[in-house]
Image (cartoon, rainbow, N blue to C red):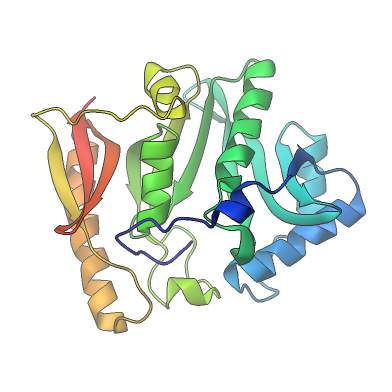
Length: 255
């Protein structure tokens, strides 16, 4: 849920060396802090904020509620629920948030790795989530940094959002499958760069900057929706994201 800049910004070295504690959220104070993180990260109004009670449900009934703490302040979290599809049990990672001052310093990846470790200890080999396909930083993170694959396009999944980062356009989402034991994931987590195969399809990703007129962003979203829907339905998967001076592109391969 961040602006769709073509370049991935770098964090200052000082923030990367901060001592964050990643642990399970436990108790009402932790859960209430997660409400505040949502306000800071996305500017949600009260209607869209997930309440403390939902974090308690996830924590106590088979989901995940992990937090990143700096001293006693919660500065990021991940919230997941148990899910099943076609007889396969997995986790649905509904929300990962980091407050703006600690974004782009590797904290999101640390939280995702805590999710992965916990899932594997419980015998779960897949975590699934959605993200806005117009958001370049999230695309880079999901595919290049984590080794996820894009498997489905869902138009306007959540309806209208109060977050100013969405800029009043439909909440289209890509479904990402993170196959925790796969070679692709191990490769990404080792920070190795994956070579794009010659047969891959490249699809341009427009900017979603809220500085652009709404009509421009709507047109870009509609074009991307049309370009991704057909190949994903024909068995292609999104395996990567590349950003250069010439623009940003999704990489699609035959599954």
